[in-house]
Image 1: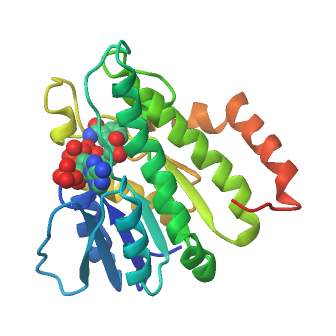
Image 2 (image 1 turned 120 degrees about the vertical axis):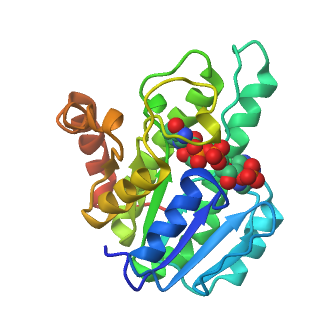
Amino acid sequence: MKIEGKTVLVTGANRGIGQALVAEALSRGAARVYAGTRQPLAHPDARVTPLNLDVTDAAQIRAAAESVESLDILVNNAGIALYDDLSERAALEQHLAVNLFGTYGVTQAFLPLLTGSQGAIVNNVSTMALAPFPFTPAYAISKAAAFNLTQSLRALLAGRGVRVHAVLTGPTDTDMTRGFDIPKASPASVARGIFDGVENGEEDIFPDPMSASIADSWRNGAVKAMERENAAFVAAEPTAA
Ligand SMILES: NC(=O)c1ccc[n+]([C@@H]2O[C@H](COP(=O)([O-])OP(=O)(O)OC[C@H]3O[C@@H](n4cnc5c(N)ncnc54)[C@H](OP(=O)(O)O)[C@@H]3O)[C@@H](O)[C@H]2O)c1
């Protein structure tokens, strides 16, 4: 899957990794980039089409899907991360609404287009899907759920020719990690890593030095082997997703 000549949609496209993904898709020769944002966006490149898209708003998702004619690559990137300590159910619900159900809702809405193009879904998850950081447990739970969603969609959609990638992103220098004094990758380098992974057909993409350090053990590990064994049950006879 080359980015050149393709139509790409990025959610959360106005800042951070999403903004970098738009720039990287353009620099790789994407024909059209739909930039999903919650506020109006102006972009100097004529190949960028802004889309009003709050991923928790079913009407906006529907309207966005109706306004897009064809799509090759959907990047579910929009996300929130707030400090919590699991004492408030509302915090968990807030993270699930964006990071899990937002990803789910946008994916379902654009699935007919992606099936038609034999396209790809790219879910920007997090290494916290595998190991939580206990200052943001609700976030980690939502990312673990989004990763599991990604794994199931991968199995369910393989028979329809849609590839589904998980991005196990590590610390990246955006507003989301502003308060953490730790080594961080640049959003631009993470965006390159993500599209390199898509172009190389990597199911699970580790786009930065921190996440790359666990890539081999993940890919060769017992859990990945189990995912493949379980997926084989539906491979022969895909069901609706
Ligand atoms: N930064 C990291 O270290 C890191 C690590 C692993 C994974 N990730 C993941 O990477 C993705 C991008 O994160 P980032 O670091 O670029 O964060 P960011 O700079 O905080 O940007 C978050 C983006 O998501 C958008 N967003 C939030 N809620 C939304 C909603 N309901 N509907 C639509 N868009 C919404 C924001 O839009 P507004 O401007 O309107 O708020 C913004 O564009 C997230 O899924 C995050 O979990 C980040």
